[in-house]
Amino acid sequence: MKEMKHTGTRALYTERLLLRPYCADDAQAVFDGWMGVREVCARLNWQEHQDVSVTRRLIDMWVESYQSPTVYHWCITRAGEVVGDIMVCKWNQDDQWCELGYCVAQQYWGQGIAGEALLCVCRYLLQEVGFHRIQLRHAAGNDASARVMKKCGFHYEGTLRHAKRNRQGEWQDICCYSLLDEEIK
Image: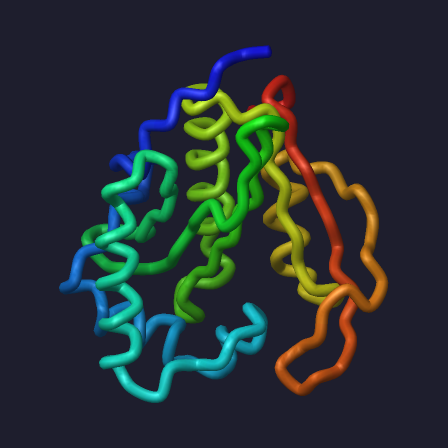
């Protein structure tokens, strides 16, 4: 079994993107891009923020969390603009797996940003940090997210029936995907 080397959230680069730790100055862009946007939050199953002060407090907590080398949470930027978010939301040291979550501001949907960021983070987590498996989930019917996962080489594993309630309290199915370290592109 390979050893994990936790190195935390460090800057990562792709051809078009810089993935970096959040800073306090990102609050307005995050609020305007997704935290305050009903259409984006509905896909992510959380309640949108009513004003930027809520987003500002959340980002302050994220910034403080970077003191831990086991926190992996990036602000996705393109040409200096804040365009999305990607993070490890769960992980298991013993079994060397993690689960990612990501979102992109609505005006950047369909531009390949989510896939580009996802592949970059997967390479880092699998090849440098030492995770063996990365898993992702999306609500059934979120075909855009399914396309991103499949395009990045993730394998569909199945659907968890009525696994979660949506914001309206209705049961929803959750589709599960995974990528192993030997499968990374």
